[in-house]
Length: 192
Figure 1 (tube, rainbow, N blue to C red):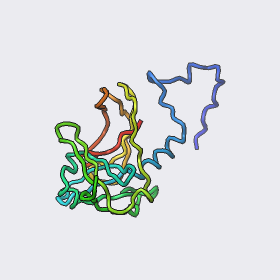
Figure 2 (figure 1 turned 45 degrees about the vertical axis):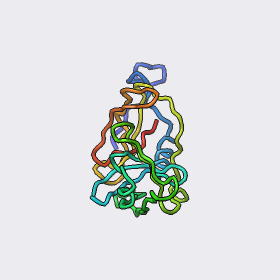
Figure 3 (figure 1 turned 120 degrees about the vertical axis):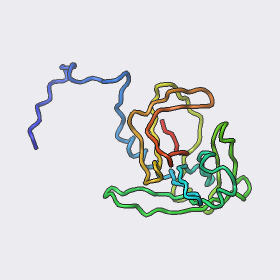
Figure 4 (figure 1 turned 120 degrees about the horizontal axis):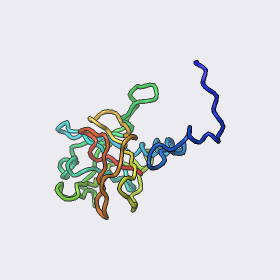
């Protein structure tokens, strides 16, 4: 290894500083929490080959976009894949597949795509037992807040967008943000 220069004393404040308008420093536990939350993020495979993302909430409900799953019929013929990702050795991880169960009581709800663009669909079986869930709760979001998106861009293995993710608009019902996504990312959760 090349030798590194010795660190100067902490009194040399001109060498250490925050480079942006707010700190980009995060506790190391941020990574562990992200990995835990990522367990509940899924790849959705429709029968026509279209791909999307979604996430598992309590009571074995998957939340995605209406334009990913817009009807009970579409849900009946789709699959949900947990753990569709690469291992630290860059190998395909073993994924687990579930089917939707939209015909059970409270098994399917959706909004018009041109309105709020969401769908909530129950899964067959108990995915919560193994894959956990992401709780839905109120959050205060403001312009210039940073967000992180765990997704299946291009329908491929799970990835996270960590950099340059900033909220551009927020009101009581809608949050708009800038980040890298691809087809297949629709339905991904957005984390603060």
